[in-house]
Length: 334
Ligand code: NAI
Ligand code: MG
Image (cartoon, rainbow, N blue to C red; front, side):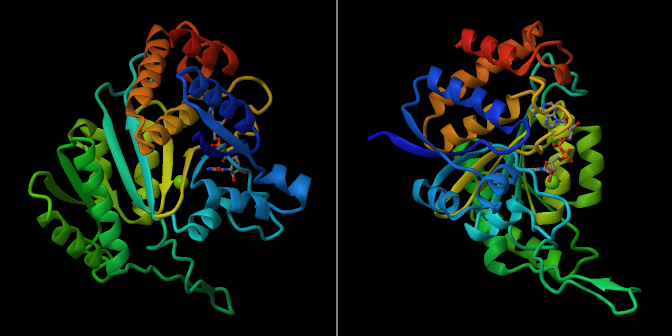
């Protein structure tokens, strides 16, 4: 039957870029049925909560969700909706591919890197947060488990194998953070032994930053802990032209959420200025996850052609066109 997909249009530029992505999915003949749900500021205004129960139920029921950026209101003690979703559905793998497209303003041309970030533990465990009574010291707990490390590193190698990639680099800081990063590195080495067909490399995080900037073409798949992955994946987005070009998938055993990595961009919301590429690339990740690689590739080459031609692109790509014009150009290509 028809596959149902949960769609969260989200806040700010979310609804317009999600609309672009859905038009494109329809154009390549995806026979999806979309079930729309509210989340974020929009949900707070309509239903009095950031993540209504119906939204959570739909994410769980359909298992595959396409999500626009959500605004977490400042003040009022709201916890990040994204963190809540990752925890609630145990979306342990954050998969962030970056790919060079000719015609962007990016500094590099041949980049094809996937960062796989552990999404539930490490420095973002949220455990042990305290500030001393006199306000002179603060602490928080970094937690690495053997199970969590093995799960994410195995995920990285399986993905590398499935996509025919050559190398997995485990990024760590085991020389200083001997217990936590040390355990992660130990497990990464053990898992590497099980994949003799894939080249395994390990690298200290600060050196990785330098090498990513000096010679990013040498990287293929990067696997790392939560905080390092957060930082490195944004660095990688910068290598290929910025946030408008960067999608991300949050994948767990029973649910997956595909999204742009950027936020709701309130400064350009409602002005038809947003670059929808990030969410379109997220929908490509979704198609690949669903085993629809041919449709994914068709969309990727249409986007690639429109960006390379350069006369109908959005401002962040150096063009002068709007979200709708750019989307129309991609639709015509398809
Ligand atoms: P942001 O990512 O929304 O915007 C940063 C800058 O990038 C802005 O100048 C914006 O105009 C530009 N930009 C972002 N996406 C773009 C696109 N597709 N095309 C063209 N330009 C684009 O970050 P900001 O302003 O710090 O956060 C705004 C809101 O988004 C906050 O409420 C924040 O909590 C939320 N947020 C949500 C995320 C999510 O749902 N995954 C991730 C990050 C932030
Ligand atoms: Mg981040």
